[in-house]
Amino acid sequence: MININGLEIEVPIIQGGMAIRCSMSKLASAVANEGGIGVIAGSALPLEELREEIRKARKMITNKKGALGVNIMFAVSSFAEAVKTCIEEKVDVIICGAGFSRDVFSMVKGTGIKLFPIVSSLKLAKISEKLGADAIIVEGGNAGGHLGTELDSWDIMEEITKNVSLPVFGAGGVITPEDGARMLSLGTVGVQMGTRFVATNECDVDESFKKMYVDTQKGDVIKIMSSVGLPANAIKSKCSEKILEDTIERPKTCSGCLKHCKRNFCVSQRLISGHSGDLENGLFFAGRDVWKIKEILSVHQVFENFKGIFNK
Image 1 (cartoon, helix red, strand yellow):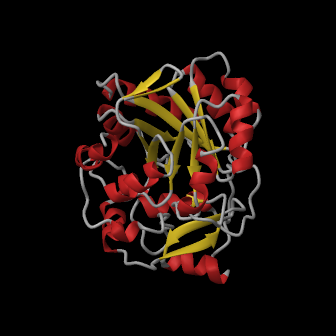
Image 2 (cartoon, rainbow, N blue to C red):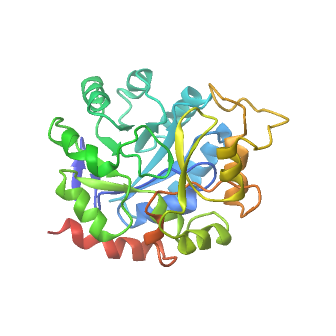
């Protein structure tokens, strides 16, 4: 059990907020019911759908020792509106990454909601501490999705944990309990895992996407440049290789979901296609160590496997 400014968490595991429509109410509530922080990915979701998912998750959460969070990328156009929706719905935690917002600290102040920025450097960790973050998630370049550094989590973690007084959750490369124990040995209070939770029964993505995780071999994850303007880790596929070769089809329409977009391809639509199992057109984000996943588990099984590392 850990206490973060009054928020008690039975098991210090955060489930990564994987957009779009990968981390939804079903997965988030399952994680919260195991005593962790279950997270809905709010990025690029219509605000009413986000509100509905938060309410659905709340109804399914029965364990008061877990928590419900929402992850929102600073890069999305609706960032401020999504934060306001989370405040109105009284989520437990707001997590923000893919850019850094100073304004969000004043927006959340006084609401009772905990704020966990995702950072990849000591500089941003210290700024987060100064601005009033409740905890930080430190993520390395071996994580899935959009990245804030070229360095692996293992290479940046200890410098940050030794130089801030905030609770630190380590993200990037945590697939097995041994990885989790290694992260704790670097001074973190807990871990954030995204990739491991994709390959669970409760994740909303298509079964073919989950099977891809199980079948992926070491070296099958490549780094692409997302239309967001950030590098990202993705499994080798027809889509990701076309992005690398710059032969990807340009979008014919645009919803304006991002503040800044290169518009060489629509990352939102490609991720949605991937999550629905479209192997031809889909983009499949994953952490570099996804090859360690050998089977699809229940969220309960994942927690049972990891609980022992926190009792040592």
